[in-house]
Image 1 (tube, helix red, strand yellow):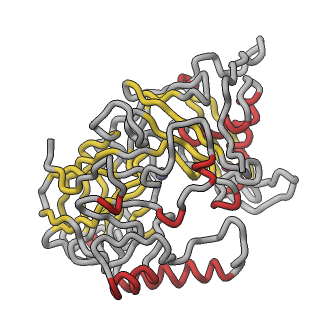
Image 2 (image 1 turned 30 degrees about the vertical axis):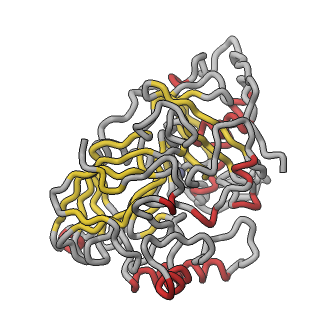
Length: 417
Ligand code: ZN
């Protein structure tokens, strides 16, 4: 086993650990770990809400999820000799759930969860159809996820970090804050908000204290969006065997990671999110000096996905176009057409006895494929969502005998509030 350079004790909260990570992006958050190009090491990662979500049959913890405190990230990890303009090579040698106990109180100990936020607390991709908070618990066994809340499905996970990235420079951070604030200013009262500005409340900034903490907490970027540094890209294929090339903006690169997922569908449409869990990552780092210029990777990560996808070979695909549910024509809006494709799949699965929220949870958590199938045929874009038919323990294809009826069981817990 590689040396654990960022350990987490399951009995303690994120801020009580031997090394305290961070939940904001800022160049002045000091590196907690120092490695060299060519090093291999292990990092523990806490589930993104630091243990606030429980293995039970209530969604009240999702309703009251501490959003100001996300994402708890392990790092920063400084790589010796790496400088702005370089490309940092990160190999994901292994990634998995928490290795200690088989099952325990923390997500990642044999189980994980998928949530849907209430509209007032961030919402999700289909928040108009699903305005309340919901939660599904998934159990892990032999690399396969099943749920007492969604009977009739079992799928192999593609474990991956939802979030990994390098620290921004002061200049880049300034650009993020300016452009995101400009967007917020177009509709400051919107629910859910258009973007999340810096928020000192609940900021965890590693070893910073005093005046430095106060200054950085007021400037540091939130971790929700993906940006030029990688960040919360939520790419389901960033699994074991992947190699990522991150642009470097500060000395040492200051790499951080977290938000591990046991599995996720393309788009992470439920927002809270994929199958969330804590776990470990084994990483190998190296550098391409001056690689940003050499390869034209000016401002975004490049990656080579791993080759350990589950073997699903048969799919049932649903398409959608850029027409609203109310019948209004929009111009090549791929976000809308992907929503329509997903709603189409949800309508279909309900014919088999699932509730709408059960179907939504399947699309968020299972390894569904989402595609921008057409983006030029004015005025309609065409998006598609592919369901692997083998994840269902019944025949989910259309046929002459009509849909098999699944027993919906206890269903998906919904918040009382
Ligand atoms: Zn996540």
